[in-house]
Image (cartoon, rainbow, N blue to C red):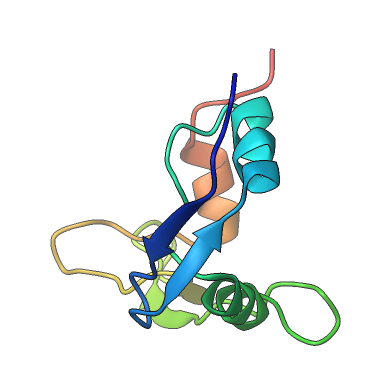
Length: 101
């Protein structure tokens, strides 16, 4: 397959950037069907925001909740809503379907 350089517009900052033939070959080899939406600077900034200085993801924001099964106070990584039951880790592990075979 033959590639030619393309000029794209960053969806984040609006700057024009070049989608090189090497990058297009890399995308094709990985099976990616979409062109990049962000320029290299915005892609790097997005990656940096995902991970802290040690290279690991930043801790999740936790929200207080009360377990619907045992009444214990717990924290969950989502904002609980009144219309759905929330469980502590112990109760959740007891009631969830086993994924092991």
